[in-house]
Image (tube, rainbow, N blue to C red; front, side, top):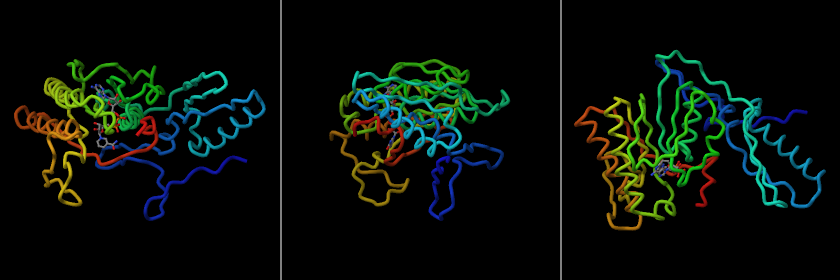
Length: 291
Ligand SMILES: NC(=O)c1ccc[n+]([C@@H]2O[C@H](COP(=O)([O-])OP(=O)(O)OC[C@H]3O[C@@H](n4cnc5c(N)ncnc54)[C@H](O)[C@@H]3O)[C@@H](O)[C@H]2O)c1
């Protein structure tokens, strides 16, 4: 008997089957089960006892559970299996890539995603790839991992470059999603000077690239730019209440100066910019982070 699939309901109890939308001649809709099929399975632990039958049964059960999650798209799934008895981990990569939209060259965008191996970035990369665009990820793997996007490595529309955004990067592109920055307090406080360098110099480098290539630019900012807010909930008109010398300042002030730079390039150089202030977000692949 095939396992019953997982249903995700919205607040009105209606099943959600896709994300994105198809409106005003702009189609960004992607089926939910295709996206789920791309999540690297959590490390599946083989029994430490040398009991082959138990291992096979456990793996079969895990396959059934996973098929519930991914529906008919499990063929695109990669997974990792940890073997405690030997202390080894085995990776199974995709045998084929999920189908991506075939766009006319004039509609296919060359998109740069900085921090694309991180939690938010890797989900964005999945969406952009499925929509048929050419995606280049640059990441220094400080908090990100190659495993989050490994299912696209080898695809003709995908490129992955190990690079630190503090250094300039040259590429021709139509859009830049600038996400590179450690996001959790232990990570951004680990090296506060590097965090603020990443926000300032990294954003300056990417805005310079956007100016030269005339690419549209989006930066992922944060609700932390409001600091310790005196207004709840915060509206975009509220300017914040930030301690510039506190332990979190490297992140909060870094993102504030990154927003300032972004609007400076818009006013002075006409760069087409967007700022997305993300509030606390978690989900599949964020568990890679200890916090
Ligand atoms: N997740 C949230 O709750 C949240 C909330 C607000 C804002 N944000 C912002 O969204 C973006 C992504 O956050 P996330 O949760 O995916 O974090 P993440 O740590 O999973 O991803 C950040 C990515 O940037 C990379 N990176 C860090 N410094 C870099 C550098 N100098 N050069 C190149 N790559 C670098 C990391 O290796 C990682 O892959 C960040 O800009 C973060 O500030 C996230």
